[in-house]
Amino acid sequence: MIAQYLQQISSFQSTIIPLPSSKSESNRVLIIDALTAGENSITNLAEARDTQTMIRLLKQNPAIFDVLDAGTTMRFLTAYAVVTNQHKVMTGTPRMCERPIGILVDALRHIGAEIHYMNKEGFPPLAIHGMPEQVNDQVTIRGDVSSQYISAMLMIAPLLPKGLEITLEGKVGSRTYIEMTLQLMKQFGINYTWEDNKIKIPNQSYQPTAFSVESDWSGASYWFSLLACADKGELFLEGLKENSLQGDSAIVDIMDRLGVKSEFKAGGVKLTKQKVKGLASWDFTHCPDLAQTVAVTCAIIGQKTTLTGLESLRIKETDRIYALQQELASFNAELVEGENEAFTLIPSVQMPHEVRIHTYDDHRMAMAFMPLMTKTNVFIEDPEVVNKSYPSFWKHVALIDARRKTQDTRL
Image (cartoon, rainbow, N blue to C red; front, side, top):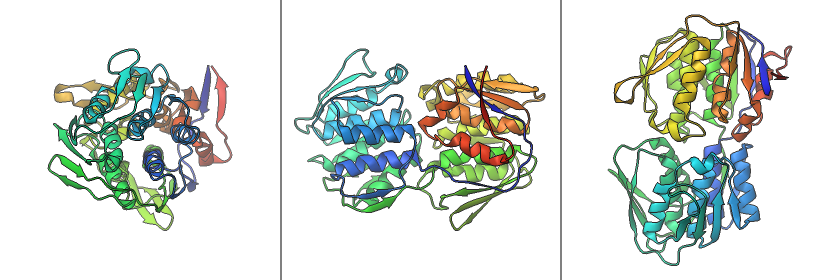
């Protein structure tokens, strides 16, 4: 088995990290661009495999949209194929075909789409036969499962002859991702209203524009974590904006409590060490992709905390709650489930001489556990899993200490 070996390094010199572009922004503007007949000027698209898969499928337009392991690409292209009245098969990796899509399919069917499950009800692969006509202009979608279903419906709404009113039912998770989608649509000329739990988008056209994708705040979170866990260091993360559309910019507030000071400057943000203020609890409902980063950080620095809003983590690339529990245990930390879906993070009290981390085919598991190298030697299994969102991650890790290069090792 291939593993990334990270030798312990407790401190480092000031380092500039050239962050990758946002996968979330990239995948949304690619759909918008396709719905605008490619008349936009889109720059700084993400290098992530998910985004590159989206680019390839939109360009080649094959009869089978094989999205590999890209959940966003699966959901967005499903809605795109419907509104453009195409006949497509939607499929992906075995794990992708275990990830539910029934809520989106039900919503699309409700407005007139013809979609059939090719295997298990509620899961890919799908056979899409377009949408002969729009039969409803109102739809209700659960807000507590995946914001990607909602974003997929929002982006196609302007092209529907009758427009669309979406009622969000129950608790709304990952609200910031829904807001990102709407704000991006607005930048491309779309008008909408969002009052209480109803989002209304009339029939209209996207307007061609120029757009440059911001750096990725999800990717930035691992560098915040590294500095929080290190004894000494300083980082400059390129391409981040203080007024970001990305919900994961919440990492600034979280890490301010865990010992990292952020200063926005021209071209990015400077990170320096400061005193730990403490993090008694945090609700990840609107930034679930930060949960692994924060859990590992707290486990390393000795911060007991309560994590809530983790419900969606069980249907990601893996069951991230289970994966976290297993790998935190490898260095004597715990994630204990309590009442009302609250989890208590109990930090490590004894760090082993070395730790081996299984990644569960999940890019965020590989990156979230990287900061362990500030306390011990680390073997990260299946390091190439980071290609899903951050292909240059290990090259950037090597920048932390130019005298010591990370290396692949066969276990």
